[in-house]
Image (cartoon, rainbow, N blue to C red; front, side, top):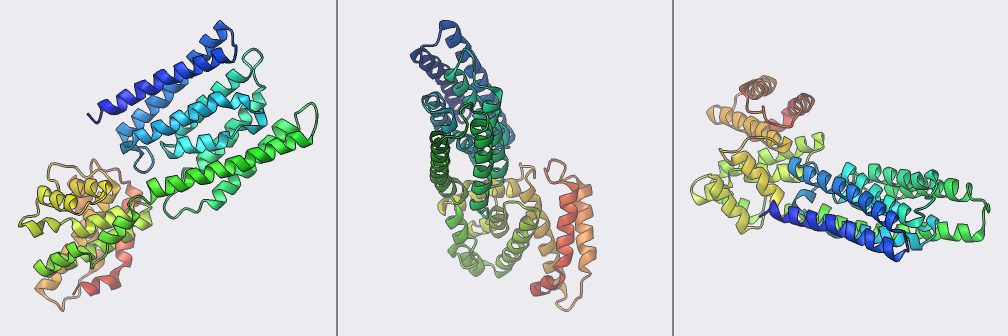
Amino acid sequence: MKKIKPTLISLFLFIITGGVTGGVAYLYDKTPADIIRITIMALVGAGAVLFLSAEGREKNSLFHDNAQHFGRFAVFYSIGLIGAVLCPLLPVAGWPYPVIFIMMALLSNQITGLVAGSTFLLISVMLEQTGSGLLAHEFFMYWVSGLVGVIIFAYLDENFKVGLPILITLMIFTVCLVANDVMAGTGGFTFERGFIILANILMCILILLVFLRYYITAVLYKYRDKYMEINDPECPILVELKQKSKAEYYQAVHTAYLSDKIARRLGLDDAVAKTCGYYHKIGTLQGGNSWEAILDICKQYSFPPPAIALLKEYTDKESFLVSKEAVVVLFADTLVSSILYLFSKDPKVSPDYNSIIEAIYLKKVDGGILDKSAITLGELKEMKKLLMEEKLYYDFLR
């Protein structure tokens, strides 16, 4: 059902793209030949967008949780399509296309957003003046502005400040408008042209701020409060684990600490890695640390889906370690377990931490457990380097 639903939505989007574009072209009094041409071009663009979106879901290359929320992309795709067919009613200098490019990219990924924005822009251009067409520099004015927005906003995350990206995008957009609309205009600079450009900039700012407010709340910070709750050492679930087994509890705490620190160093999802570090043995509360027991607790306490997925990947014996976060937890967990074992045998022992880390590194790399992982050799070396820098911390494990 999960695969059928996106397919049906994609088919619907493909059909309405052709239907809406062709219908509006007819209302704009285009010739039958032009209507067919515009509709075919729109369908080709829509097909490319939907193919890239499907490929992104399949390869898990979409930003954040977009792969699990294709309906969200479909809604904004429809909004973008409506905007594309309505833009010809506005002066050319009044089209808010950088915002459309940015919205499509943030709700999918860079290439999908760029192709979607380009398709909508193409529709607007063809509907504006099908016979002679807009000049090439006017088309590329919006395309370049949209490209800049896609590149800059592609790196938006929970710690990303939106002020500078908005400023840079709108500065580039303003320069393009002035250079390509005013400077190239036969009438030179006029108050009317200046007013249209200013109105367009203000409209883009307003739309972008409203969208980013929605995006940050619904996507970036969707599980922030939940992660803060469950990643607190005093969380009721962890307190229960502590009461049942202090050894398991402290191992979880130390594993979570290292997982969080490594994930941050490598630019990974530190909240998800930290959660896995805390709860990869929480199944012991139900008498056995099976994946089924862990899943039952996750559902009971409404864990975020990304955290559940990583816990399954890490604890389910039938799963392979694929994500980088899973590898991070593996190294942190193995190192903590090894050091705790040495201290349990002799609390006064002075382990050679570098040798322990090197041995773990070689065993994991040569053992084949990382063969299907997405982590790179450079990231593994960086992780080993960080673990060796934490020597003072390991003494707290005594």
